[in-house]
Image (cartoon, helix red, strand yellow):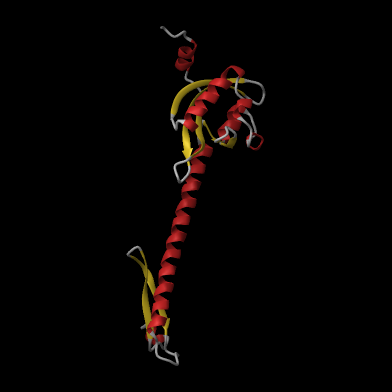
Length: 196
């Protein structure tokens, strides 16, 4: 019906597909063409349809990635615990809002700073060893106790968990970390002398 209403008497249709899945049809009106359609013109339309299929898929993947990043950002920004990322040199590249709420440091002032600058002096060497284990040995660590100094000079005992941050080739490009406050039971246990 639509073809008749538009006065189309001749057209070529080629499928728009990506990896065997049909995405639609590319239709070209040939009603007013002065010459007969050649095979090379049909091949050109097939090539254009393939590129349209690839472009549609790329747009869909880009949208899914953007939505995934937004969900991660919302999860991170609304988490009650501190989540942050260090680069492979131990410099801060990201902190979530909980850092500011709990420790008082402004997110922007922390960017590029070495984390050792806010750790208690007694913990700096142990922290460097822990981060070295994560970056060099690609280890995940859990329940490491450290003290960190807040913006107003307050000292906070925190429990650290960390994992390597890999790029697409499997190379460690940094560390993803989570700080939580120890429970009252954990605080007591961390102060108790270990029995040998």
